[in-house]
Image (cartoon, rainbow, N blue to C red; front, side, top):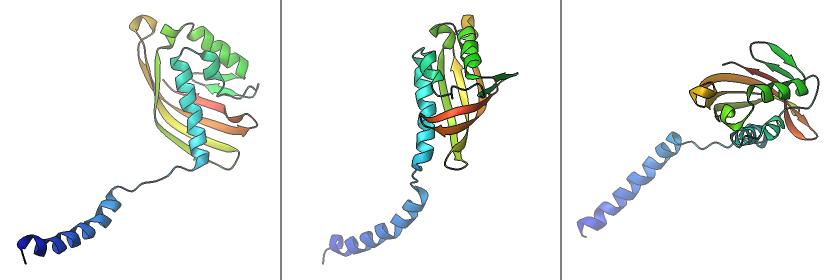
Length: 155
């Protein structure tokens, strides 16, 4: 028998012995649908912001007087939050480009979830400069989908 045919079975055995180790190094995980649906809310929000669409961005929040937006103060109510966004970000240049990272969705039950993550807002110095921060959100599953009811953002 040639050397090639004698080494082939040994090579096959070595490959099969290595596959379990490779599988352990590259574990694939799936995200539960509930968590995926929650993260999609934030991705849609990010896309709307980057289009300069404050109305689209605001759709992620529950339209309720009980909605809380916490930064350096506590702001109550959806309408007031939208007014503050319009005042602070009057045009697309002031809005800049938003990116979320390190998003983690933590369902509490079928109706409520917590999301944590980081944001980065890139914009010119004239428009306020770049800013970064972290946030925690409480979302409620409503008839209109997952909606933010508490937003605590630093930055």
